Image 1 (cartoon, rainbow over the protein chains, first blue to last red):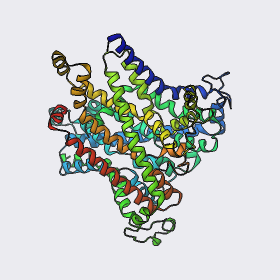
Image 2 (spheres, one colour; image 1 turned 135 degrees about the horizontal axis):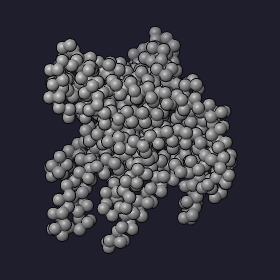
Image 3 (cartoon, chains in turn yellow, purple; image 1 turned 180 degrees about the horizontal axis):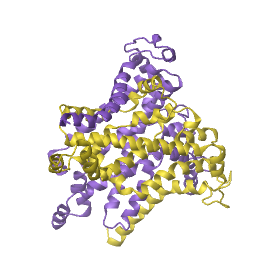
Image 4 (tube, chains in turn blue, yellow; image 1 turned 90 degrees about the horizontal axis):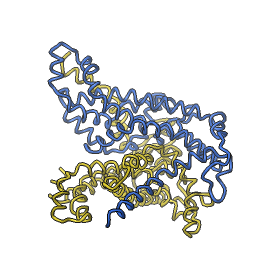
Length: 273
Length: 298
């Protein structure tokens, strides 16, 4: 193939793929500003004739989505902070501290990674019901306070911490907790940023578990509320698009701002499994 | 503090959470699949009885379970190759030296991955709408008559596969891209000196070097696709004519609509067995890929 032709082919294909990737999201944003019923015309309009924020007002004032936005933020935030602490501590210990049974535990956890969470779902529900955590924030946060995947990501990165550094700190009389918070955590901060981002997005986007555990309208997260709204208001295209924007925009913005950490976490997880 | 004690202090909180809220429930899940746990047992555990393999026999005699299994396998068998093919193609395009703005394109192609599945399933439900949907509008321009995507049992699953491919291909694209960038440039230089064409370089160098990545990506993607749930829940509610009921959708309805936890756990265990077997097959096939490919990937 001649070079100009090849350049046109490569860039043309990329532009086409980019259009297909971006179009549904751009269309969603555009329709969310249309007047009720405007999207249901032939041919389907691309831009709102008279942009309006009525759908968002309806969503927040009447449908109670503000409450769900708060729930999503609070739950994803709490899960991220707590699991970050526990995963960081365990990941560091599995990489750098010696204790009997370390290798066996590590191998067992590696094996457990292949088990899909759904096998545990029914017993977990019974356990949480017994603990009184069904229909509470705790039902989401407590089981997610640590994850095997998060422990592995941290461990993978912590393996590179030089032992001499830790030894020197111990010689100076620093306690293990002090070493962890003063020396290890700063060294781990890039991977902690990745784990935090992956955890936050995973928790925000999760659907099946919140659907099962949170029945109370006042506790629902955005994806669960959106799914039930879409069953009641199937005809209100514009309202549903506004709901989708509210659900997607926070995570999309977070990703665009912190892309580097997200991709690094993704690769760290994919390469070493 | 003794080093041993300190180490246990560090791992204890995470191990406690994983043990109590994952390991024990998994074991209990297997146990539950051997009981007749239903709504009566939920009210009073005294009603619980050991049922042996009854649930497994019941499920294997339930037509809807077989349909769910078939639908899920259809989704995996068509969706995984389609997604991975698109991932590989776009990674090769992004990696090409002829690409103008690779950083920008990478971000845009990856964006659907981080979006909320429920939200984009809602969006695609309208894109697939028969009269006003953009998909049919574009097809109409090409002279293809309106398709009742989500209302026809023959096209509902393909529509869900298209959504899943759109949403997920960016993930593996990034993994492929990293693998491409790890291939040493001098191999290509040597090949070019020997007069290898671009096509030969792709077939003889790039693709063999990507084989280990391909196996990894295949396993990860398959495991994810077996867990199909939110797409049919939002877009079709399992219909039309049960053509988009997946194993997890079946499990959810049995477990959390009818409270048949015994049957639901059995469905989950069978899904796990199926995932495990498929992973094993891919891993074995990858190991048999030949010593040269393995060396290259190391």
